[in-house]
Image (tube, rainbow, N blue to C red):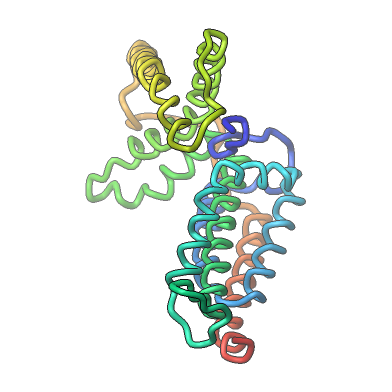
Amino acid sequence: MLNNITMGQYYPVDSRVHRLDPRIKLILTIAFIVAVFLAHSFVGYVILAGFLFLSCRLACVPFRLLLKGLKPLRMIIILTFLLNLFFTPGDDVWVSFWIVRITREAFLQALFYSLRLVFLVAGTSLLTLTTSPIALSDGIELLLTPLKKIHFPAHELAMMMTIALRFIPTLLEETDKIMKAQMARGADFESGNLLSRARAMVPLLVPLFVSAFRRAGDLALAMESRCYHGGEGRTRLRVLKITRSDWIACGVLAVLLGLIILEGIVLKGVLF
């Protein structure tokens, strides 16, 4: 399961999406999230799926890699679907048995909410897969630069977010090593019910927290030994510039948002 988590990982290839300005990719990701919440019908979600698939093709990222990142969340997606299916009221009743009542409105809401989770995870995973941690940090900092006028710690916030994303694969790798070491000593993490598996994970927490604090201390010592003092006087190896490709990407996403808004205004009442 730990190998299926793609959030925070970087897929190093040379593609059009990888070469986009990180600021533009952050803005496009936020706009994509807005588009996900604006979709209200099958037509809207088909448009979102097509855009996501096209982005994967242009990024040279295997689509199965995004699907692989959804595996750890399958229980949350299934639970979201079931809760909305059984507890959402509606008028068009499909199934009515004892206390179970499934309506058309409940089914559509359960399906759409589950798809929203899928698209949100896939979209944010595509951002981290196509943007290196350094570029992501620079992009976040530059987007937050106007807030420095009110003494907002833009550089520090960008650095913390980037370090957090960067350490996700590291902590997962450390967890996998601890699990294998304990399994070699007779620990069982796979048999039993869900509660038993959760209880078996408790012995992992102590060595994992110790390792995380040790890595954090080593990182702080390394930054201090290199005279790191935040963003003051900091230069960049690569100066970010918005190119023609960035404007084209913005135009494509603007068309996507326009189609989603049009779908919500025109098609929602017609189809549903």
